[in-house]
Image (cartoon, rainbow, N blue to C red):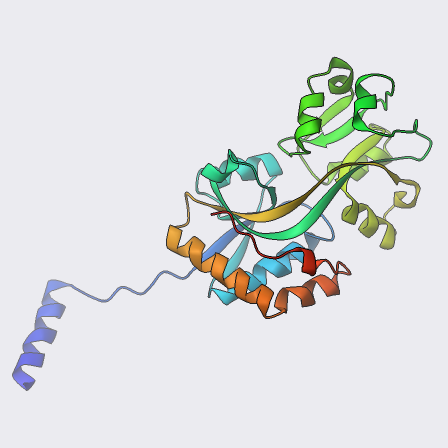
Length: 266
């Protein structure tokens, strides 16, 4: 038996066959400049609700979470090309499902028109196509604000008021500089600005709810295998059932985890 083991060891050594170490698992997540309470940049580190949820999921499947700074539209393109692994706050639609596996939802996004309270009263979106002119409304390029919003964009009066921007951080800055009169933003972001005394944030108010929808972590089907995606979906389900996700929501005073029963769309 010894001579057999010796010959086997000699064969492996001389033929150059060696056991290659496994590649460490890394998940590349897109993170732009501050989008509190979901993405918060502190010095060179990222925190926030979406970050902690994704970190918990990455740890569960034995992966390291790596952040790639990229504007939203660029992040969509990188994910479709397989150069990013995961985005947060991705609204589901059938077209996107060809590129992304949707795991979650991780948040119920409530998009409002937000602006100064002295703007004309607004009761529904249709008024922006006919009788109400808010001037300039900042909308994030590539974002989805619901089917009604998409249809109303065909109206010249409505489309003329929209200002397309590429960066989430630009919205509050544009309001403060009076370069726009209203923005489209999740109500949780406005509440965070006001709770943490962002400059002039207290004067801005929600004017009209535009769209409410669950949003998901979107995992690139180009960079990840079906097996990896299934493992991530199973891990999210386990974290939800064990109450570990609810603890993170409570930390950020968003106790809506009961509304977020896992419904992956793979």
